[in-house]
Length: 199
Picture 1 (cartoon, one colour):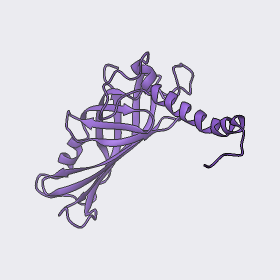
Picture 2 (cartoon, helix red, strand yellow):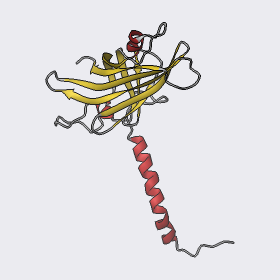
Picture 3 (cartoon, helix red, strand yellow):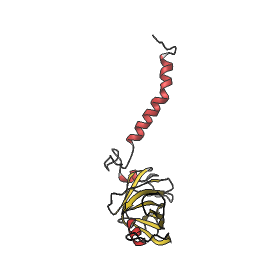
């Protein structure tokens, strides 16, 4: 029979790093906020939505990043940077702009398991947020026989003059017209603005 030449004390000490790692992972899992596909919106016990969506913690200092989770009102391409030549039946600039305009809802888990939906659609664009309030969402959407590649993002901050939370940045919709070759044939890109609903 195999016998270890190490004392029981040595074996326990050798396992300590693994025990600490497992305990840390368990604590992190229990302290998570927000929700993903399989979770409800209550988050962890004792967590509030503000704590779950505020990446740098509550605070009113000038560097505070507001809560990203929840409902927003968005507008896309009020200033068009480049139309990219997209003009096919049912998919002109106005049609593409409407996809990212209106009711926007941010859900998920801060900072790297976020997702956003527009106008109560089932289409989700997945994203991340950093501690400076930079946010990015990307994803794909099928529209008719076209494949759309969507990217949007910007800076999340509180606009002090208006006392409201905003995300200001860019939006891009690239279109693969035949949905077969994976290449972007035309696009629409412009500014993106989201204002927290109720602000």
